[in-house]
Amino acid sequence: MAEGTDQCTGSTTILRGGIMELRQLRYFVAVANELHFGRAAARLHISQPPLSVQIRRLEAELGVTLLTRSTRHVELTPAGAELASRLQSALPELDACFADLQEVQSGHRGHLTVGFVSSANYSLLPAAVRLFRQRRPNVTLRLLPLTSAEQINALYEHSIDMGIVRDTAANSSLQFTPVLTEHLVACVPSAHTLAGQEVVTTEALLQLPMITFPYGLMPGYIDRIRSLFGTRSTDLQAGQQVVHQETALSFVGAGEGFAILPESVAVAVPDSVTTVAIENAPQTSLLAATMPDHLSPACEAFLNCL
Image 1 (cartoon, rainbow, N blue to C red):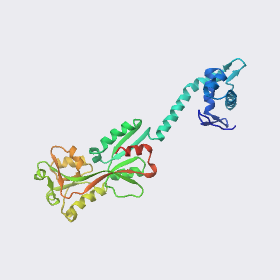
Image 2 (image 1 turned 30 degrees about the vertical axis):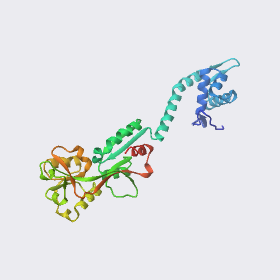
Image 3 (image 1 turned 90 degrees about the vertical axis):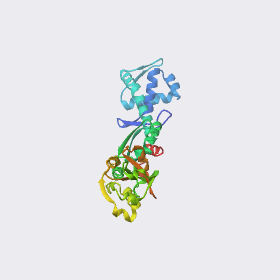
Image 4 (image 1 turned 60 degrees about the vertical axis):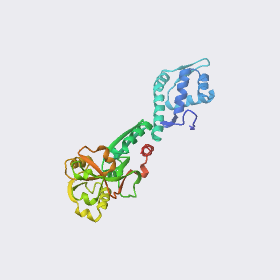
């Protein structure tokens, strides 16, 4: 049987060793509703002979008679009535499915998983999430708090679509887009004399233990901090080691030492902690990390919200 397309649909399905087109089903529904080939043809904007041919082809593919025809009227057979009844709901469902697929393809529907370092939650992430939900209300957004190293691994495993990482070294397999740059600040106990200063030197910070993070989880960030102290980094007093910056702030507030964090953390510090600018403080950057060959339209849309 020759294949063809028209304004209704060019979709096909395989049945009984042949090819049945969705347009044949639409044609049949039109005839079933009108019970008149002429009116059905006018409704479909085609001539009557091709309509009759397509209905006969459909009957041949299905192996049943759907219509009884006479010169005066058309009637549905029991098989035709059954098919017409089922297609009344099936075709709209298919149309909705096809429309949804187009939305998925364009990034307006589907699922998106984004990893993020905790410091992003104090700066650009909340506004980006609100904007994305306005622009893509039918995309299910899942947010996962992960360290930079965990996000890199998750990208390779395809368990996240995008990561928001901090100061990560270049990687030939990933694409990094800078989304925020800020200075590092010292977080000190509010009861300490350093809390009363506008700017502190690295020399002054040496009097307190430094609360640190595991190097393996955030090497780029730790290297940035070490570069701040230069040769004096060996003189730092080792303090508590933590994974999350919220824990670091809690230990600072308890008087366990100081921590060096992005300046955006100032919006979330407790009263027991004070942020102080550091003399000649380096900058730190948040980067959107993606796999170039797995960048979906929804992922691109979220990136545009950052």
